[in-house]
Length: 228
Image (cartoon, rainbow, N blue to C red):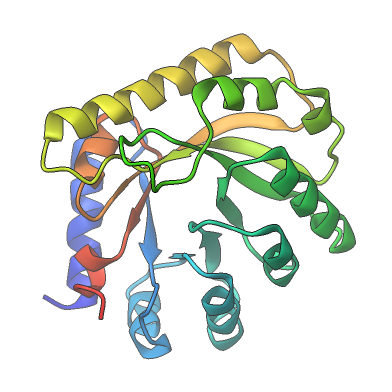
């Protein structure tokens, strides 16, 4: 199948899995893929691309049409924020107040308000980044976050365990959705928090993510083939 056919097929499945609700949206993960491949996806109607590495994100932003929504989905170091601050649409992987403060500083310089997701550690592996539920709740309610004028926390992101157990993956996604809902209901009005996005699901597990309430899925190999 072509990239265009893969995108169409995935969009149909997203609509089917979402039932009567609003379908989850696709973030096409473009890491290691050449600009020519991305243009093929763009010409097929894809406008939401996700990159893991800042250097690759900047290079592709400069080479591709400017109506693309760029998502930074990989771990972000504070010293790299300045390179993406002028244009990145959504940062999925915020895992500390220190990083939020740097994003705020760089967004201020660029006269923007930067949308972000807090990354929660939901997997059993120790290698993945992210906050605990307690840490995320504390951060969302903190005066330090409320003082930041150029960031907006619009949701949460989680990566499930790399396991063949659908039961475990579903449980991890479901627990994140439950935390998302309970936090949204209990948080009250905050100046720069608007919880509306839940980024759950990648090429191997995105249908489970959608069934458990994801609004954004991060899919690469299912669109473009296995990475080189």
